[in-house]
Image 1: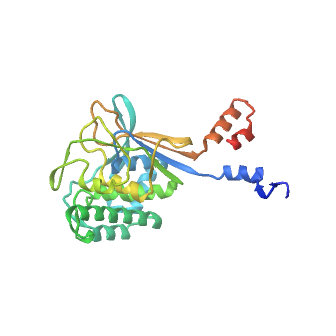
Image 2: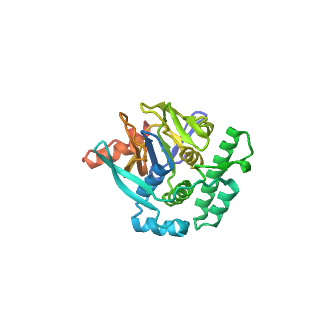
Image 3: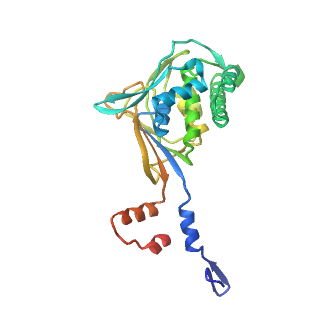
Length: 294
C-alpha cells in the first residue's frame, strides 16, 4: 500500500490524507438558528431576517420598493423594550383590510412583483402550503380557499420580504428550537377559535413542541409555513461561531413569561473545531490527532 493506507491480513484500511481532512473540515457552512422563546410569527421572522442580513433602513426601503412598490414606506425596523430588555421589532403600517384573496390572486401578486426568482419560488410554495392546510381544515380544494388574515397585504409583505432576505443570507442550515405552544384562543375571520389555530395544527405534524407558561397564540400559520418551506430542522443550539445575533419581539407581550425570539447566524462548526480554535486563542498547543480520533 502507499503512504495513505496499510494492510492487516485480508483487510485494507485507507486513510484520508491530513490535508484532505483539513480541507473537509474547512468546508464553509453557515447556520441560521432561531430560538423561539415565546413563539414565532411572520413579523418576528421578517425582523429577524432584516437583522441577520444587516439591512439598513435605506436598504430595506429600496428592497421593498423594488419588490412591492405599492407598499413602499410601510415597513420600519424599530427598537423595542420588553421587561427593560432591548430588542427589535418590525413595524408594518398598512391600512386595515378585509381582503379575501384566493391562492390564484396571491400567486399572481407574487408572480408580478420584483422578487428574486429563487425567493419568488419560496414565497409561492409558502402560500401553496398554507392553502393546502386551510383546505384540509375546511374540507375544500386549495384553489377554493379564501385567505383572510394571510391574504392581507401585511402577511403578503412578511412572506415575500422574508423569502427574499432568506435567499440573500443563504444559510446552509436553519435550526429552530422546539416551538412553544399554549392553550387559549384567538379571534379571526371565523370567530374565536382555540390555539394552536387549526391551520397551524395541520402544519405541525412531526414538529417538536414544548409547553409555554403564557396563554394565547404563540405560533402563527405564516411562521409555521415559512419554517416548513425553508427546510427548518428542530433541535438544540447548533455548534456554530456566532457572528450576528438579535433579540426580536413580536406585537404581543406575554406577562410572566420569557418574550421574544433569538436569531443568530454564523459559521457552522464541529465541536472539535470549536475546541481547537479556542485552545489556539489561549496559546495552548492542541493534540489534533486526538481530536480527529475522537
